[in-house]
Length: 193
Length: 140
Image (spheres, rainbow over the protein chains, first blue to last red):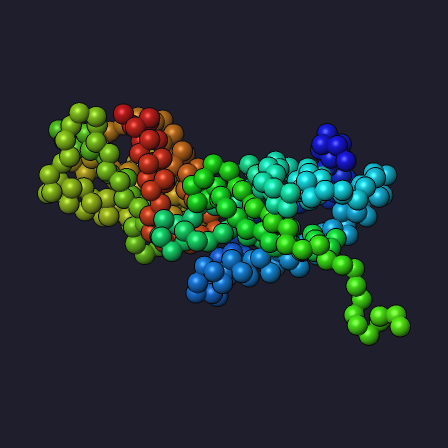
């Protein structure tokens, strides 16, 4: 799927999605994170919880993505290389759900970086200057979403934030590494004799 | 008279001051200890007058509520009952109103930060820098 196609598809899918108020969205996520901060002691635990929540969201996202695309009459062909997956994710998927698209930087055949310039989750947020917050990955939800949705299409990946605007960098960068291409399989009980 | 050179700006919550800043006119040095203490005293004694003045108008900007010697205290009461108080030696109503409006916008943006809890002391450096920039712009 060509790059310009992916972007155009993303844009038209975004038009069709029901919208929520951006401030409400960001503030709700903000309270979620502050609740987690109150419940858990270490920033690692908080990051882990955010990732788990993102995973549950991501698992459902990919079905919705393919269904809506089908409804809109778009054809999203199976990706022939991991790079194509990255493009579809960044330009179409993220655009459809969040309204922002990301840039892809291929690092190798099995890993890429997603660069997100505008993060709708971190509107109004400023992390306190206490050094213990240096490890908090505020938008770790995205990592979970990517992992969950790619797992549904049989790609086991590991995602992590390498650069975060809230921590002082100029862009949000998520590194996605392909670990394994899963084989479609039902459990052992269902194996045909 | 040093009192017209030094401006004291305090944000007061329900129980305690949340933010304090002293602005000096460019060129003059900081004021002495006793002048500072006197300034704080004047400002805090005007706190009761804020409550009184709040009932007289439905505006957030309460203008000058107290005059002592050469100093005046102007107040802005936010929708969440947080008091912005400015001790000054006579500035135009308009410039003070603009100052308060800009600080209010900064305050609202700060309160939208999920990590800032309402009615707690404001420690963010960025807030301090921005308030000082606003003060320099409107209050000289």
